[in-house]
Image 1 (cartoon, rainbow, N blue to C red):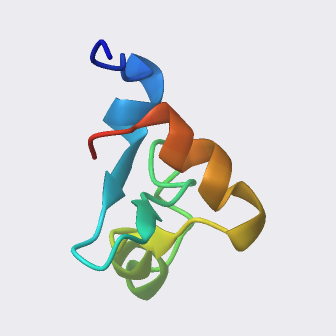
Image 2: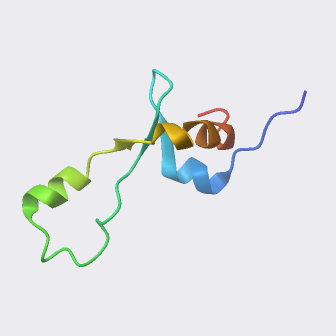
Length: 65
């Protein structure tokens, strides 16, 4: 069976944890940062889990993590 191709857009946006869960970076950290509090910006740096509804779809797009 041939190797599967990764969806390159998804591969740049999602990472797999060692336990197999999918992590994503948070939105709202790109611009208009002056009005956001330091605490809010700091928390937006952390990665969040992908919702369970989307997990299977994302896993199919990045077959090899």
